[in-house]
Length: 304
Ligand code: ADP
Ligand code: MG
Image (tube, rainbow, N blue to C red; front, top):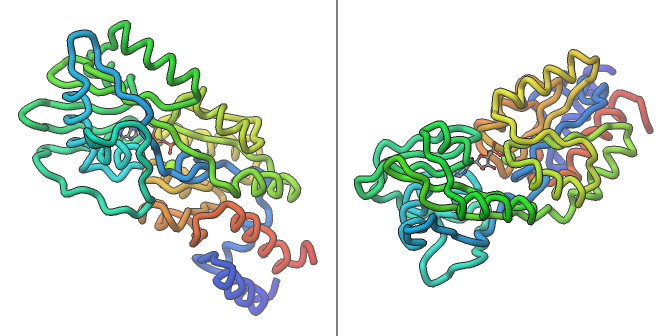
């Protein structure tokens, strides 16, 4: 394509709500045959709801709720925002807006985000860990029978169990769930029409991932992956000769977005993801990813 055509294409992209880093990006967009989609915040709304709080035998549900909410008030993760918003009078199903203000971080010391696993820090003098059961297992905090049962139930419902522990012991499980964006299924059908193979890639558990995949018409699911494994999955596809687009929104997606032949960030996501990507979908809508691929093909004369 001529430089003029590429400039026009870039301008047209801006009108469609697609921010393109440079004219060359359109060339890689055209060749893409595989599209890897992050789950939380990309295919789903990222507005998580808290469905249940379970305490281990001999522990108090209020303590689990209070310490987890206090720690997560320092987190920007969708799960963290949902847990931080729990309050004692409004249990069960609390919905949070994507850009809703976070409560003031109070009383959390030495906060650390363990990307793709959870968070840890000191609250009320306790060393608190909140995240995937395997994060707690790294600290030798193992789930008792009632917590293990809560994890199994959550998996059975296609939800995400978040384990809560402090001072060396697992004390509770908080069950959260997410909702598929209204446009995701249509967008995935249209990506298929353009000849792209969709793959769902997530740090969440297999059952929750399968449930979302079934709702939007994706057959291939890679679940339970850490951020570095997201990069490795993109590399594996590239080594198999695929030209890979990756769509994501989180800090945990940044390295995979940079590795992909084409990185698309949700404009509603974190700045780190936006910086690592070639294209930004301003409204955070997957249908705009379809527009981006059509635009590049049209600009480069592949389709009319
Ligand atoms: P995804 O790939 O779906 O965007 P992430 O890689 O961000 O998910 O997270 C993977 C998993 O790590 C989550 O499903 C959750 O179990 C856990 N996790 C991540 N961040 C947090 C947090 N702030 N609080 C609790 N759990 C978390
Ligand atoms: Mg995400």
